[in-house]
Length: 314
Length: 201
Image (cartoon, rainbow over all chains, first blue to last red; front, side, top):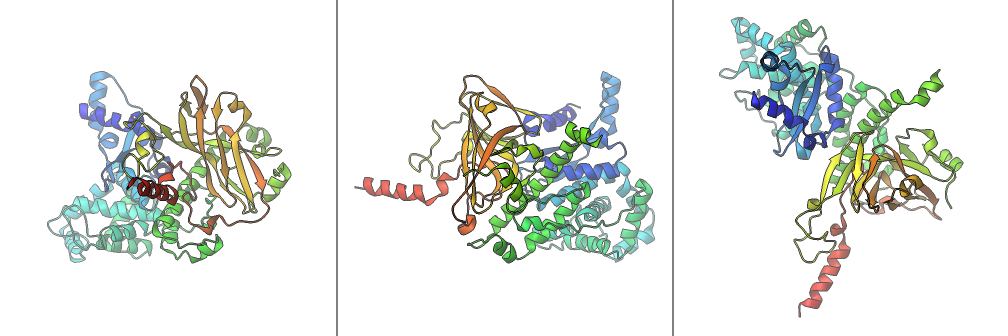
């Protein structure tokens, strides 16, 4: 119980609050609204870790009801809001290319909230024919934790709904296209196949099951969204003027495309008289992405609150 | 010659870009009001006795990171600037300045009267949020609001066009404050070698 309180405080102390990457977490709030009824009862909190690969979602504060029940019965304290805690590496808190991982992490929360993976795991473990088919198609592997593999597949597909193949492509790069399976993680190559099948609408036995269970649990169809977005302002070194919440999701695949593109046109447009290197591209993409999201948040909030707008609309 | 309101408006979104421009009346008769951004480096007392702006007498290059602390706020929140404290920040607005216009940034008089000080020049062709160094030269702390119209920029037309990207820049598309990169330039390195050549014998 003490650990529970300390964990809450860790995410709410001023050191943490003074470094919130609110541009990166905005997309998660939008996703939350879509998938979680009464999403206002949750607050997404972030902690910046000094470990280089520390991306994770911890469900203790948001989904473990026992703590809240004990606190209520013993201290008569009822929490109106619960914290969804997401940890990310401090040095990557402004890296919007890597931030696609956050979609995977919030996918874990949606999964646990609606018990999606646990229902799939139950179906697999109670139907040996299904289990054997999944093993034969190399989607699940013997002597591994099926539940963890199913959770990872779900979170990948969930992320792909919003950011296309950006996440799996990053994982392929990060793991050097690792085809090895661990007890808790499917191989990266398998994860890519699953996402590619999802994005191109090609069914497979697992994907069909995952979509069915997801729909039964949430009443939302788990399908890829349109991810096309014009970010030609970036070519002129300007933040893009996005107009809807969903444009934020579309930014991520767009900047991955820009990252992978040849910058000859951008160099010419801006009369660069030097060679564009890795760090120059990286800084520009991240700065413009952050400012695009930030400008959208500030402008839309401002327009909602500006009294002069209210007057002129009368 | 300063650009007037009509000249600024005429060039806006053609070769002069300001994002976001939350209120049209930020464009005044001969200046544009800019807002305080939300990311800051705050000067703090560190272990080092001095801010070493040379390449002598310390680790090479000296670290400024230990003498500044990064913090961020949301618009509408406040920030207290203590006497003699300097903060490095940026404007809320991101600008792209034409290749024949430079921007002179200063405080709006309402904030100068509180004992705050800033001054900066941005070259033709600059792109990014305007970097500001704000110091409280008053004897009392001053509480300022993030997002408030604290600065004013005057736009000055130059006689000829120049290319901001004729060389690789230290600060490009800057949206967050950055600590001084003075140690990275060749100037101090040459002066260090000059010093060494004198003191070798």
